[in-house]
Amino acid sequence: MSDIVIREVATNVWTFSRPFALFGWIHIGGRSTAVKLASGGVWVVASTPLSPETKAKLDALGPVEYIIGINAMHNMFLGEFKRAYPTAKLIAPAGAVERCSDKTLTFDGLWGKDPADTKYGFEDEIKACYFSGFSNKDVVFFHAPSSTLIEADLVVNLPGTEQSSQRFPFYGPFGKPVGWLQGKLSAARSRDPVAMKRDVQTVAEWDFVRIIPCHGDVLETDAKKIWKDALRSHL
Image 1 (tube, helix red, strand yellow):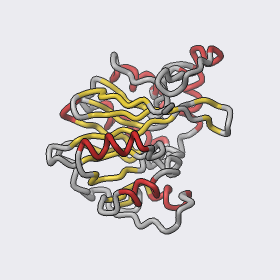
Image 2 (cartoon, rainbow, N blue to C red):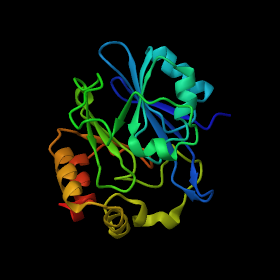
Image 3 (cartoon, rainbow, N blue to C red):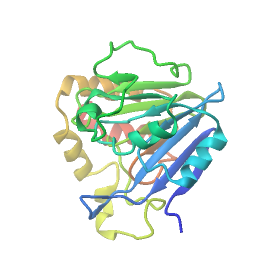
């Protein structure tokens, strides 16, 4: 039985959620997100394995044109996506190159190395903000047609009901995006307070109504307030 939950969260926005345990015991879940672009092509954050079910859905959506590494840590599956879709552009933060175990990969774009105003071809529909001051070097994306924010480790919402058949009540309030622990973790991961303030504010000015995190449940209500409250230490 497949452990992948595939769901259309908004028009032309699909999530691929599955269990994942950090260090083998911290159950945070994982999620890839795909967007069908107006061109008919597919843009996908590759943060979970390219399972048969995942590939079948992506192929049904259209040709994969962009494979995205959403931060330096989410690099485990970039190689299998690129091998399956060799003509797609592979774009990730520069830090992913150093951490990626697959040294055969050729990247078509690198946030943090390319000029800051570099355009990769999807910007008419999807905006990107590279968090250079965050330890994991996250990139936050805004899909304007669906008013959806797509992000990795800056905001989590645990436990993820689509990402595990188990429940972990010990998370309690600590797994929620707004709370003492999340605030402490966010502050601890800051490497450049000025850059963090700039980028958190940039994202806060986008007109989004939901947040799709890589870890935990999708946030469908009060998304902008949650973003600001979760990262208030940087504002």
